[in-house]
Image 1: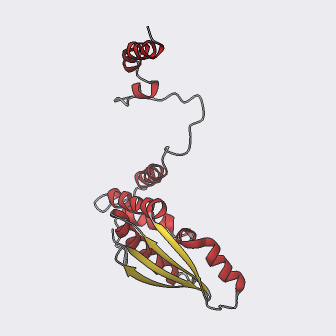
Image 2 (image 1 turned 90 degrees about the vertical axis):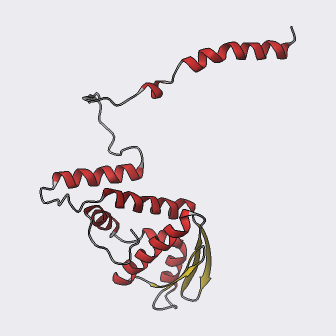
Length: 195
């Protein structure tokens, strides 16, 4: 028997055995009343950043006796986290130095376009309110153009910081994110936010 035919037959014979043996992870299912062993320390994250963020906020809301469950909207927060993911991982950014800072043209396709517009709209308001750099935002068909400049263009360290942070560094700057996420989950009215 030719070697190639022998290999093919061996593979065909082994396939039913492989297909019939599920991986251990595939056998794992959650059932009512199920408990997990607690002898070893448990991880602090839920395995996925967005899921962990949602889980943390749900736990905080459940622990707070003043939570108004008629207003809580966890789905609104989930949609915001989807926007964060799209902007962080799916957008394309072209950065160009300008006097006193940088220009960032942020583009996307499909759902990413709307996410870029929502996220930058909300963040520009936060930057303005916190006394950050000057940001001029212009909507494009497929995204936005942000021109980010410092008050004093001769401040080379401040200009270098804007350019080094880039678009996503500027989006991640500030300590308002946790409060913003909690407000979304609680159902608070938020100006300049698409969700």
